[in-house]
Each structure stands twice: as structure tokens, then as C-alpha cells.
Length: 284
Image 1 (cartoon, helix red, strand yellow):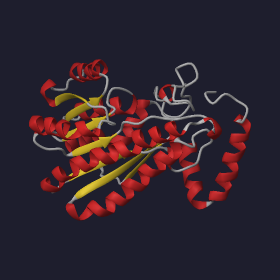
Image 2: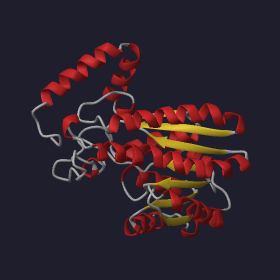
Image 3: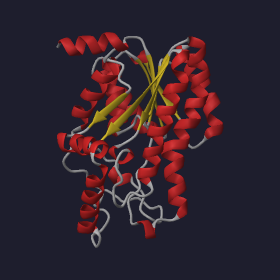
Image 4: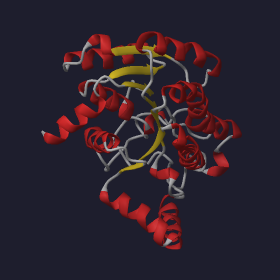
């Protein structure tokens, strides 16, 4: 209970803009921030799902006037200025931008088209860069704010079948680290969230080599953390102002630690894991 009070106090009346808020970790964060008394901008492409999340926030006790549903395709950079203005018209400021929107890609390197490589970078990196660049002048004028980027364990470790996804998520880490250094003297903080396996539907929405989706039959997330477990870690560490938040089961945490201490051992381990799947379907 004490932790919940501390988290609630940290976010009361803050304006938190979350992209990809209609499902998975984005939905979980939206509900958690709403419960903590924040003003939450639920942003995404599916208005029905965004409204469902909003209604569930209200049913759980959030005030409806603290919630804003905002349609935005994060690849539509031309729409970002007017979208930003809509948020400012409603709430006057932005305390936290969470660049959560993303998309996976899972296939063998020889099967992946260059279009899929480009889209993986556009969705996971460039969209976040573009929206961050829109929001930063507002935060600089405020003299405060926090930019949050969603990376992945695949942004720390090279994983087979993810030669499109890994570089995009590695790039998110690099962007956030560089941005953190550049923005510190403005009073703007930067946090990178690094999830391992979290049981969401994101794998089903991952692209295969020709750009089609993996689908729910093959894109099943097993093991790892539940969304609730992931959100508990994220919220408590965001409340504490963490620069980087590892959201993973213990085995994945140890693998990331080993990557720092003995990267060659991890390279060999990942080679063995890839060999076991080399003739398997990418979704298995």
C-alpha cells in the first residue's frame, strides 16, 4: 500500500502522453497512470480500442475529464504538429511523452524484404524521434519533462530471426542515451524501458519477411512476465526517476548482465539457440 501511495503522489495531475495505448504495455501504463491521478492522453490508430481503454479507466475510478483519446498514426509525421496542439489545447502542458508504439519483425534474414527493414526502423525509431522533436520545445519552455522510449531485450542482445527488430530497438537505446546527455541541462529527463518477454499480443502483430503479420496462431508469447507484473516494475521505477528500466524475468536479467560482462559467451549461447530453430517455423 505504501508503494501505491508513493506512486500516486508522483503522477497526480501530470500530463502523460502514451502512444500505442490501445493494447499491451501501452494499455497497462495508461490504466496505471489514470489510477495514479494523471491526465492521460491515450494515443493510437484504433479509436474503438482506445475508447475501450478509456472506459475501463473510468470504470476503475479515473476521472473522465482526465482522459483524452487521440487518433494518430505515428508514421504520419505531417499530422504531429496539429496533434500536439490538440494536447496543449486540452491540458496546456506535457509532463511525460511515452513513445510506446512499435512493431516486431520475425523471420530469417534471407526472407526479409528491405521494405520490412525500413518499416521496422520507421515504426520503432523514426516515429519516436519525430514525435519527440515536436514535444521537446514545449518541455524546454516548461523547464521540465520526461521523454520515455520503449526498447526491448532485443535492443541489448542480438536474437535470431530478429535482424530487422534488433537494430531498431538497439537504435532506440542509442537515441535515448544521446538525448539524455543533450537534454539534461534543460531539466528534461530521459528514460529507456527495456522489456524482456511480456505476455502481450505484440508477437501476433509482428511482421514476417514479406510484410504480412505473423498472426495469433504462431505469434504466441509464453513465459516471461504478465502485463501487470511489467507495469508494476515500470511505474515504481518511473516514480523514482530511473534512467533505464529493465522489465524482465530473472533469467533474461542475468543474460543481459552477462552480455556486459562476457559478451562472447552470450554470442555462443545465441548461436546455439538459433541452431535449434534454424529449420523451425519463425513463429514456433
